[in-house]
Image (spheres, rainbow, N blue to C red):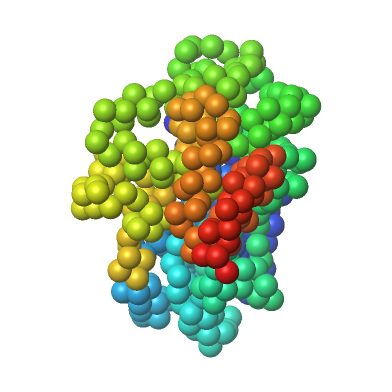
Length: 365
């Protein structure tokens, strides 16, 4: 509202040091809704104020070889030492690593007159390791990685990302008329635990509190009630839609933060008009990767809230998830890894459901 963005202080200092004082590339990684894009754009705005030319490209908008070629051609023909390029959602482009290597060769050739670059993405681990750009980027000795939010099951349930929660709270405090109250560290940690380190759900809860005209120093939202409000909103929008089954199926597996191929859906539906309404609303993302159509829910937390409210029964929710995973055996390595992040407490039940009959096991071997 007032042009103020709060950044994790030490991570912002580290990022600027890498960009200003080294010849390393900067990677900003994290789970969905962990603030990666906001962090990158805030850094970019800082360089813009220092008279840099700051360029932004999001692979979510275009994810094909032509776009990659245009990015490289533009860099090759227009590079200069006061240029910062931000590439967002790099995990969506399967040929990102070859593009990275071409850009890196150009940087090495230019030497001291090189430009700066920030890669932004999620830790998604596809079955084909050759397409796993994020993993290779992390292992590259000329790259520096900043992690936002939590990355695995141990972090997700046993630690907290204090800076992210505190900064979001301060943003809504200012939005709510400039409240000066600053919550103690112990209170922020309680919120992190209560909301499962989920920034999307926490932000939604704060926004609803502000809309109700309540003072944030009394903030005491229930995660369960927030889930119900989110779920009810989207279910009421789509429960009469003929595409409702596809939407719910996508939410079920979308809670694992994966892209699913069009073959996942019921072939009786009109593929050309599939999920039109949620795509227009911006909660479902449609991508074309190597001439194949893929879909995902924009936030895993949103998908989880919708499914939780729909079933109101953990067993039914998990049974639907098991059924959804079985329909895309080619995504086994990714879905199984993400189960440890999003459904760690239910792993035993899910595995029994997946492997009890043996058919699914035959498909993934």
